[in-house]
Image (tube, rainbow, N blue to C red; front, side, top):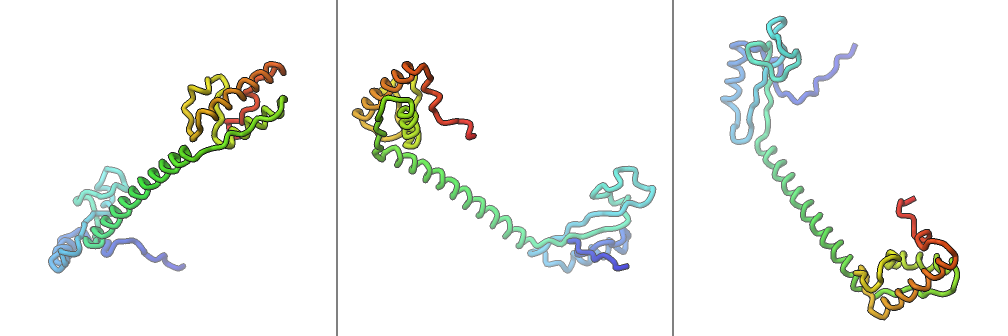
Length: 193
């Protein structure tokens, strides 16, 4: 049977939790380049019957552990990773902020661009349907119960166009009343279905 390889991140593990093991850790720390690396010591593998706490508690108290394990970490590498992460996060925030500004400017540009109000032709329900769809497509669809002159339009339309829309509104409401139908049945489905 093939034995599984130990690919854990421990540089040193299963160091006996004895005076000899402690001396090994002390000697190792004495030769460590402390400007670049640091050693973190943890205790593992509970002494059978000695520890009454959680069996897999990590870290174990020293007096209940059979072994010591050591983590050797690169201070410079960690600092560089933190610095890179902070820089990336800052750049991401800047990009998000710029995207919000771009979206705002695009919306302002849309408002400034003149828009052509669709022409209403005919005297039937299909004309009503067509005009409402065209108004929706151009971003000018409004609630037919509103007074057109009181609407704060999100597009750049002039007072002549507002008067025209008010005239069409009256015509459409008259057609719908004549046909005994609600104008709102022509509105696009807002559920996304």
